Figure: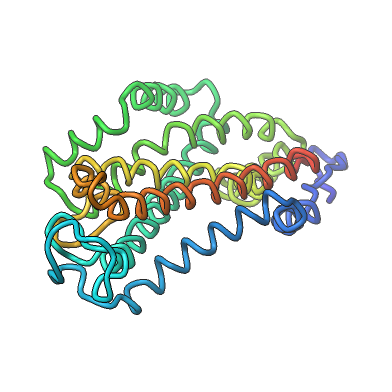
Length: 301
């Protein structure tokens, strides 16, 4: 790409488009080639499949009482009953999809909001927008996620939008910090300076010249962010601020049945094990991607 500036031809190297396009393919191949990555992918796929298919194969309604509290497995309730005599299996099968969907939505919104802010802050380095962004991020870093969620719930009431908002607010500071730091190394490249010389708008420079180079960083980071969101939601549900009973949730099931763990351990072990397997699968896949990105190198101009 050649840009004419003050009647002089300046040769500018464009971003490595092939490497940008190939980073996702490289990440996918890294997961399939790594034993831990394949194992993590199997765990993740199994948990997601259970969450999606579960409500359609549930033998009972999640609110239906099928026996006495904390009964053992039987022909009516294959995993026994929980604290109110409801079927553990039915509540488990209905309790995963919203947990995963909420974590996915909250994480996606955090990236959609955080990455543009990070890029703008890096592009305006040292200016008020950058200083303000860092100051606000530092403030939110200092607030424990659970405390923020409780404050939001106390102020606006329990509900799906409030929990999603809590995820977004807690994910924004690390996303802004990481992507701003990486973008600082990109804004000084010659192809960005050439775009400025051509008179392109700030939005065009951020979207066309800088953002495509963040694909490798995004691929390495998104799995860990999603894992954090799942654990955060499970903790909120355990504290009783997630879904409203009689709706089920894996974290809520642990909270409701923890007093009967010695009598009917399946009512606690099954949802707790599922959360653990989901997060382990996410972590293994994310680590495989991160190693691949590290070997290939972050896409740069």
